[in-house]
Length: 206
Image (cartoon, rainbow, N blue to C red):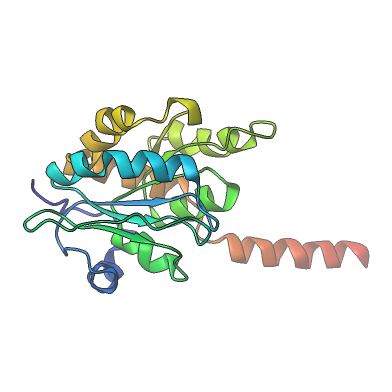
């Protein structure tokens, strides 16, 4: 399986070699990052553990952040197979993003904003509670072509095989989705926020 070589201008590309080395990943293989947020997500963890062998057989390596309160899966790394690396917690998500070609994750507002800003396409699995705000978070970037969207109840190993694997196996599609996410993302949010603060202060003194 050929690695994705064309990477659109984004914040991930320059740090990729360092990032993959930091996690013990192959420098060239397509890489799926999985995380359910700072505490992890049991549903995502269970599905990924079940589908991991099929992804590895297809030439995909996996960096799986299970969350600090969840038990690390026991993994036997098979010689010649792409690595499946579970970790409890990552305090350098910038490195995790740089290492990845695609992410499987929840759709919290900060997650969607960060992935769009760094141009990382994702399969978003909105948290199935609340008023549906996580689905609303993900819909614009998915509509723009920068991600996939699946309901929690519909996330199965088969869905990952049928929808995520084809993206990771297609360098051109990865490139296009990454470009779409990059174009949708905002990397000047800090400047905009500062400007809004100054504007609010100024309006109080008028």
